[in-house]
Length: 395
Ligand code: SAH
Ligand code: SF4
Image (cartoon, rainbow, N blue to C red; front, side, top):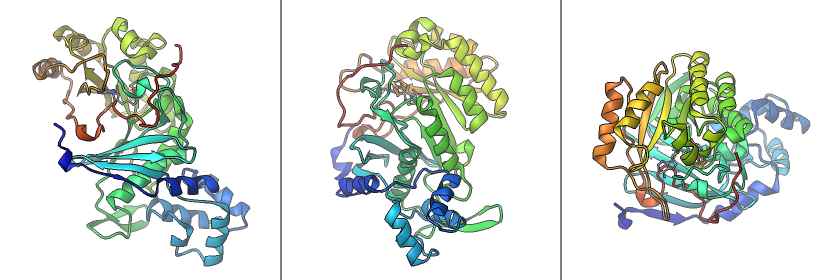
């Protein structure tokens, strides 16, 4: 499938300078509104300036205080002496023949994560990372072969959205198609956005970086900022049961569950966190989620592994398991990576599996593989700087 002539890949020159800029002074990206206000008032600046800064950062995409035109020059300099609002550096940016786009971001400490933008006819989804690596070791996942290096901060999660919006050129005030958006009393012209949805399906297990993921979701959902509704944000988990309940109460965004198996026997092997939180407990938490966040379907992800989890019996069992849970099952063709111990189920087998789910009343789209030529597909994200297989958390 790969067609190297259609790939635009550039090694960006700003990676080191921008990562350094992030390091020198405390960065304000990723603070809550309240935290931002505390920081500016501690410098003797009026509290309402924090709201102006917030808008500049999250609706106009400011990367420098000098771009905050409604704040006077002396105040801009005072801020610039104490803080930064620089993005992470972009080490690499690749665009697939299918327009999927991947950014390799470099943070101040040299760690890198990937962010992927997947455009579709009616939406554009940004797949963000929540950790550098992952402590879990799902056997089909490339990220799972990389040891956890660390959690991302809220700012490092938000910077992924900001870099994507920079790349797509969709800040308020930029040229291009616009539409009028009204939030409360505020009406503004915003670009007709390509980036409409966010999924936490990049590197890492978001529920193991819970506080920072929730803080980032709140910033994404701020109606006078990035303005993504909770219905447009999806947190995907391999099944950290206690955090599922917390997520319902704290932000109520969409929930995706990486299920991948219908028996504990198999799931214990391919999604090892199952040994701690088995299927029945996981599905109970899902039932509770839809009670706490009504009118929401749970999205179950099911990677199709040839001869492992793809039989008609498995499909029938899945229908039974999901009884009573408003759900949708995403059938994900397994994306191979070098050394992977599985192959992808055949098309026939995937379709047969899907037909059984549909007959059982469950919507079950087959996910198209996107960005194959740039290694941007599900589960393939892995920092090129960290290729060692390391120690895993024991469950
Ligand atoms: N840790 C979280 C979120 C990141 S993984 C989770 O596991 O849900 C995002 C999705 O990609 C998960 O459903 C995961 O199971 C799937 N995935 C991982 N490796 C894959 C692969 N090689 N092919 C297809 N899907 C994969
Ligand atoms: Fe971690 Fe998710 Fe990959 Fe499992 S599938 S190793 S939880 S990133």
